[in-house]
Image (tube, rainbow, N blue to C red; front, top):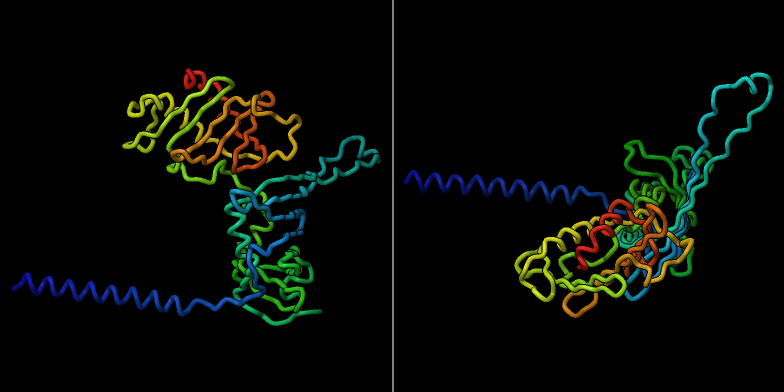
Length: 336
């Protein structure tokens, strides 16, 4: 009897806790503020994005190929010159020292996954709150008298303009003024961070878009030498020669582990000397059964400088020299 009562008590307690959690979640859902639509559109209608802020600006243009949608992005950053050095005897004697100009940095890169997610939010922009129209002296209340930046988005033939102001008192949101209406909104501060630091937030660093587990077969080639390896059916990270598909090859496994560490450091829009496929240190072709998933080519273009190109990068990218060197050094053992 005691056992029955004990179990009944535990059941009542568990039910009460579950109801409490459900009630709390329902209340939290109800307490969420209703988002306010600033403008509405879809990524298919996006034509271009331009953002100009303090000491940085970028432009984005959507593209599409057989693999899907991607984005070409150009980013510019101005870095202030270092503080002047202490006065030397020359300057102390009256000679003027010209200040160093700010450093200008320009970069070109592609965005895929992170960029697509950001653009999906941008083309259908929702604000956390609408604060009414503001002009004249009231602009200073929102930091819009000296704006942090201007966003121009061309969507389905229409230009949408958003002026970015200061931070809200809590700091997690930013004030923004919609150009065509003059209405001020509080928008997600992370969106402004993405616009301001597009070079780190939007650049695609992965070399492939498919999952590693999708790959069942590889062809590794250098010049006339070529070898095919297959994934072991009972071991996710295990690889074997195609001629002996059940025999683990540790040398191939180690080499492929190093290959997985390759990441994009930067995009090279116009290499000084465009490499050709026959100059590749190695070419890897990826398959899921008979279906081709993509490729990767690795080149050495200068001392300690390696470029790679894949179906996903579309362009040449600079990769970490240390990782590329290890792959080059150990390749002979893989293609024995």
